[in-house]
Length: 197
Image (cartoon, rainbow, N blue to C red):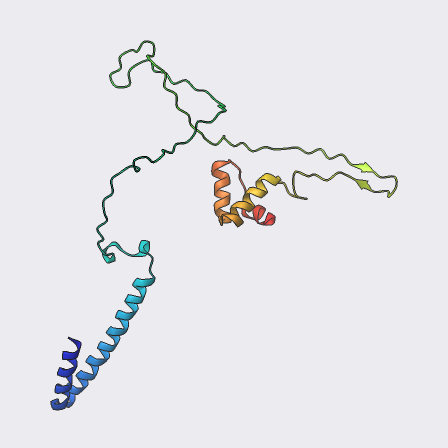
């Protein structure tokens, strides 16, 4: 198609008036721009991840429908029941949840195990630091508190957790503060956390 268009343009160029020749030049410029844009689109398509492409740009690929489930002879996987149980709860019914009829004694007991995180409460520690007068150097001395950094009101556990979240997992300081506030009920401000990092 492009060759035919070029030959047609050459024929018109030879017999064309000055206005037609200007139009031919414009057509050639538009064709050149079009080729450049098409090349850029192809380049963009090659580098764009599948998740970033709109659905209308993706090719319809028919996938082979596999039979659901694991292969015959495959060993099943399940979460093992923990050996230590911390809490036992009994769930009983007095009336039927569907029709409201009163229920008698249960006919059987079904056991189910769940694993969960404990509810976190902030642990506030009051450190009584005994100070002494040294007779040798005539100074007041005191032991070092090993549960926190010097002049910090935050304990080592919370500091280690925030540093791990920030540097190991890449969590932002703002999200760390939101996480502590939501899950641990621990109110913290950005300057307090930035001093430790």
